[in-house]
Amino acid sequence: MVAAETTPRSAGPEHLDVVIVGAGLSGIGAAYRLQTECPSKSFTLLEARDTIGGTWDLFRYPGIRSDSDMFTLGYPFRPWTGAKAMADGATILSYIRETSDAGLTERIRFHTKMVSAAWSSASARWTLELEVSDDAGSAERRTLTCSFLYSCTGYYNYERAYRPDFPGIEKFTGDIVHPQFWPEELDYRDKRVVVIGSGATAVTLVPAMVDDVDHVTMLQRSPGYIASVPSIDRFGDAVRRHLPAKIAYRLTRAKNILVTSGFYQLCRRRPEMAKRLLRKQARNVLGDDGQVQEHFVPTYNPWDQRLCVAPGADLYHALKSGKASMVTERIDTFTECGIRLASGRELAADVVITATGLSMLPLGGVEFIVDGEPVDLGRTQVYRGVLLSGLPNLAVCVGYTNASWTLRADLSSRYVCRLLKHMDKHGYRSAVPDPGGATGKKPLMNLTSGYVLRAADAFPKQGSRNPWTMRHNYLLDVPSVLLGDVSAEMKFDVVPSPHDAGPPQSDAVPPLGTETSAGDVDAAGIGR
Image (tube, rainbow, N blue to C red; front, side, top):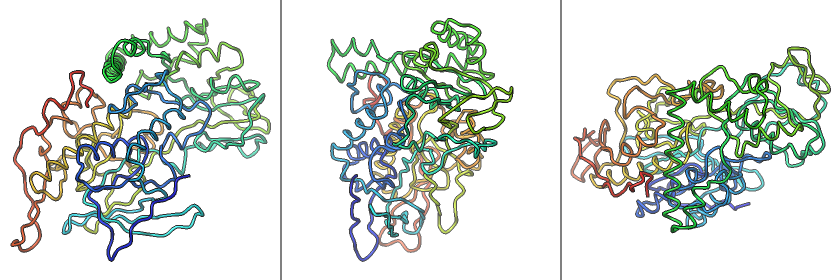
């Protein structure tokens, strides 16, 4: 456990140039960019938990891994050198911690949860109300101010997961576990296990548990798409043998970006072709077309919901082994010894794992107030996927839904650094995007998954044109975020001179042209 940093005491609240919220994959990447691209800025990271890693420390269930390859999930400034392209959670956590240990860990304030953030236009500052706890669990409130706030909390609710109200669940005499709160003491060896769900967690759990259980059943209400991907990147291994590590990493990263983007476009533009390819993958391992038709033919198109991956076709091999099976049917009720299905069939179980989804929470559930007025995040609009209308000097880090989270997260952090340098250059003390009366109505995320739809109203919206969209397209976002005009459709406040009287005047800024040279984007289009 890492000790909490003690906040310095002074006559008034401590003030910093930038505060980053969250010390997970996104927060550590943001801190690196800020430290290297804006070295004069004072900053800290606030982390509510007692350690680094965010999602990759929170989730402890068997087989926890990434759905994205590490050449794109990894940071562009820290080459991935591991053997596996699809890494397990413990390896990813070590990678994040090693990155943080390079001068960033001492910037983190652990056990520090931001409860509210209040913006004052008069002082051009955020006042942050913090809840700081110790190892014993006692907490106290403290205050911190900053000029710029960057939320890297992701969109998971760390304290609450989603589990439907299953009829009769109180009757079940075995163990019921949600993967988000996996108990260390759970013993499932040689037991009958039922995993409820069809998403990434269920697809991960079944092959991870199959060798240890008596039998594991994946019970899904409806099928989802699953793509088999190689566990080892042979292209990456080949170029690493013949080229310097950094060059090999960039080439492999660029290749994977193009392949992932290309397959996504195929799914959206030629869905029937994509369906045939995905079914063929399942059929090649299972050798049973009836099983494929029953369990692997969803009613929606690929990438309407997030596409799950099976490294090395591990799920299909688990099913073929006979120690794992798949059932596609609705639940009627839990019984003392298992689950009775709508057909009347009963699945015997000693352990039931409810891999039924996540609860989403915008910006960590923090209450935002601007000049005394509470802000409804669901009524704000996202700008370039980073800033929000009506919230000055605030940035959010939201990754892609159809590609590696880090690809978008790193672009967002580099954009924040560009904006901060632009503001310093021109003497602006605040910046806020101006939608000009247009109203964004589209959900922030372009998925029809249940966990997305349940929380859509609480999240910021996007519009129908750039820069008010989340395009979820890295190749289009690179020039827009890294080379685009940072003053377009923005409002800035100038720093008042000593001779000025009254409040600072709003300054509508004319286009300033490109401030980032083309050299900031390398030839592969993957950033520095």
